[in-house]
Image (cartoon, rainbow, N blue to C red):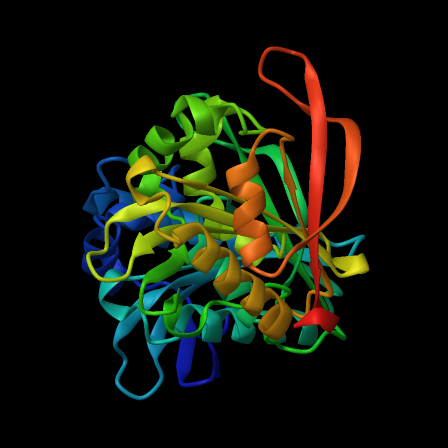
Length: 362
């Protein structure tokens, strides 16, 4: 059990004097949320067990358990480790947590790189990093530290209440660069897109109520293709889908008042062809004011310029003339009618009138 250093950090074995730090850090709601198997309440006895037995067992199993400190001041910053070591596969799993007072200082990314570097130097070939779908902060750390997203391990995370959760799998090989991994869908510059009248910002967990009320409007629900029972889940996992390069889900706001006006999404599940698909909905009080057209233009221009999309498509029901006019005003052209392409909520199907805008026309 040796200490390692790098990137302004010192990672050392846990010591008896760390008890108070552990108790204070484990009182944080975010740590408890994403480390659900921690004792509750987390007491001094819990901390002593980890220092004297739990962390020691991690080392004895071929892994590691580190206290993370500032290498010059000794300030306690968090914890990190290496677990699930499979010697025949030369594989292990990186884990970490950061005390609330040490966040937003790049600690998690730096410590992940340090542990990975140490593990690879020790002979491992592959490292994994697993996060909950609802933990986009950890997913950002993985990407920043050179771990590429590989997929979702369904129902792989056991929870204390007997339920299970999906885990997003990131991995890095010994000859991969230290990062960051280039993202398919970058963040909006400054966190939003705006033309001064409307503003687009990423959909998030706090938007659940507004998002559900919008999509439960009869005229919107009729056009909604998906599972209406998972609207809140879509809000909770929207950032994860964005980081995965699959979909940019956005809220449309009145730029002056900040009022919730609707939603718009860019589905980019065909990145290999350079084709993305748009979908949007608007609250009644914001219709007829050009909000939808402005939103479509904003996200379309971003898709072409920042993402590198070559072709944007948007489908409408045949009778949805208002949406067709929105697309035409935003520079889309009617391309084709796909017979019986769209499922309706009553089990029947209807035609999809498809509009397209391509980068060459920008």
